[in-house]
Length: 181
Image (cartoon, rainbow, N blue to C red; front, side, top):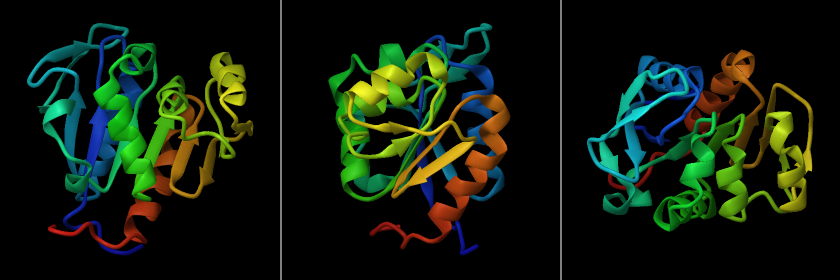
């Protein structure tokens, strides 16, 4: 695996996120030396998980540029249903994808990918509850712990997180560093 020095990831936040699906990636990326920013609709706002656990945003999505990041991670829970209603957030995900950077999501997270129209013609996995939504958005569902299709890396549920994070870190280590880093 190549160096992860000078890598920066945006992890998206909104209320009703799944605790492990936000915190495990944040901590795993940081452990690997990746800088993590929590990006949300509001700057320095505390978002609460399904179980009430706090996650404070670092920056508002309207104040960031894709050029600052090597990728984005979209946690699940019911937060993605809220996230997909913010045009700036959806555009951020779409632009990261179009720039060939990492777009990773788990559980209900691919709802944001569908809203950004980036699953069309792609293989993905997700929690079963939204499988049909993503198929209707043009994707091909695979019931696997992690699915890598180009720069999209998806998983189903928290037990899949170790495999997903290995795939995310491998992807990042094999990509050229973003310009200006």
